[in-house]
Length: 575
Image (cartoon, rainbow, N blue to C red; front, side):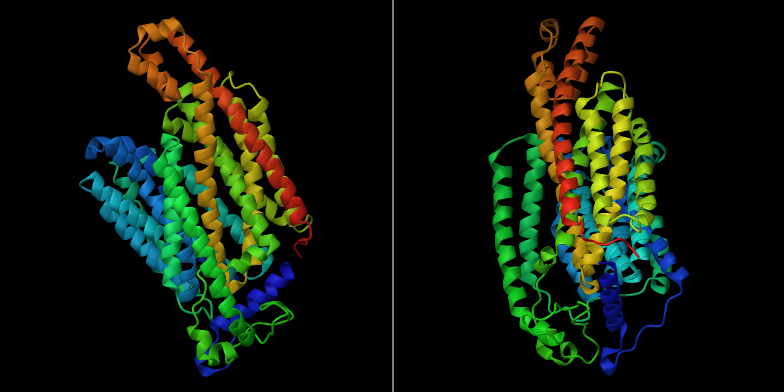
């Protein structure tokens, strides 16, 4: 895999940088290695920006509610507007970056994100803030696929690329760790808008130094943009994400189920269109790459890659063809599809874990949001270290086994939760989180590198967008499905003491029967012995759900580990 990736990316990179107008291949002058690493350092700024923004806003919600007099529904939309738009546009933006240039798209997204953040920080009403968050989702969809696909082209050599991906992942994990602490500090010392306004200084180094240090890259023969496919991708992702979020927060209802069903129907239409466009483009691709049906795959070492002056550049039909928005042939690559599945399952399980851990720390252990964020920092640091330390390991151990080992280590973390005693403080859960993060950091660093290496360099934007979409879907499903199971188990197993029910208003008792937060509020309104009895019952009911969800995550991680070991077993060690 490594040799093929190097050959393909180097050839395509030379073609993309060549002077096609002159009809001759002009290989780019070799870049000094220090320029590549400086370029990577600049790419970390938008990564940090997105990671911090995702987690910091949560700590501003109480201040937003007070300042803008936002209702509960408006607060939900303030949170959800961003991921709804982001998820709907990731695939389209990744494909757009392949066409117009990934660096150009990154600069457009960064400038727009900073500008919208600055304006939204002074939103006069909740409606304006919701609109601003949607705008951030639009520009945010340009950032993550662009950074990852640029890394694929800046670092064509597999070993350097693997380290770059590890640093990229470390930046995202570091931003996620800093977000709660940084967000809480900003809200405490300034005002809620500072959480958004901070995007401006974070992004300035990229905009000032990026044009000189980050090289442009694009698909040399992208074809025309298929606007219907973009609209269809929105009609797939937005209803599905919306439906999942509503199901997670409000339970089963006709409206979210209909939204998910509509999105899945549009998904079928979308896939059919991509297959039709791909089938129509195959004869042109064969001519452009000098291959014939049944011959070597385009871009493989046997077939070579298109050079300047090839039929791909001389043939107007090739330049003007309507290309698929999503190249479904990527999923025919076992390495690519297995790595995507592993990432989705890992994020599914991880977000379910974080969901109940945050509630446990804040509601059962009495920690503040900032304190619980600090408590999770060691585990997030472990994620960073595991991702960096695993890079040299794949020179001795096959990448598939490294991914499998990381997922198995994550399964060990869930084992501690599923069969451990949670009643003696948070130590066990935080230890489980540490083990889990070590496994996730190792597995996802290598799986992301496999995703980038398995895709042709000219399709790196689309590959990165698929990977990011997988992250979003995995996170959403983990929160929705495991969160629903956790809530249902809590509600089904809660047995409030009779004295508490009699002593409290009916509404408070009903709230306690719905959520752990409701039980904590009920206990705070009762005298000592009754309050302790309510908390004991609530803890027992909540833990019953935690054991179930952790067992599900354990099975999923063990299955993903076996899948990775079998499907990726032939991927060779790094050279």
